Image (cartoon, rainbow, N blue to C red; front, side):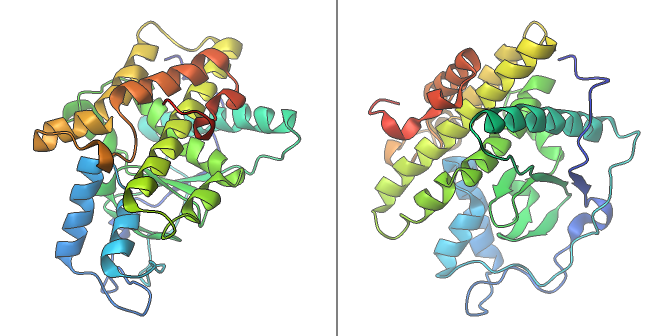
Length: 295
């Protein structure tokens, strides 16, 4: 991936200094009740096995909505200029800004750029306290993507998905969730929670995640067309990453069996299909996962 020398985003916040500790506040639920370590462990296991957002799991297990933490995260600052990985992240984020800015303008919509927060260990968000073990995530409440770059090591060594473009795919997928939030999709789906069964909610979650994969493909299409910065093997890196984090693959690796009713992100084949659909079309109109019977 030929990313060096490209524009870097000014929307990267570096909160790695101090590790973003939780202090004594912990995670608080509506009504002021805290969550114990056992609940956190369950949430993290659910995240790795089922692909469920741990912040959502914590809310469900605790019986209430998650409040913003009382503890202070490390103050935000610009990443050091000599931090190559942070420079890579800022470069990818900048290109997503360019692509989605143009795509949104073509539809008569102003693109509100998200912030991307680099953290280590734990971080306070408008959605609750984020943990590194959760992997990268997007918080609609503050319109920020949260990333502990140690996840890239996990992606390479534990999940079998190496390569810089696999990392770019992860960032683009989270930015895809931001696009969904701006379009009102996130709110509509979240509004169904409690009105449909758990299995139906999981099925809606799959469509949300596959759409974000398609958005990652749309982003990939445009810089390649305009800059030609993809190298041989880059698309294969992204496709492999999509395959390695499919619900069926993760469940087979972790528990030996596959439970389709619990899927929240889609199968490996589905994630690859929708990424490729966005890649080949370059059109967000081709990413309507909610208007198709077969995923």
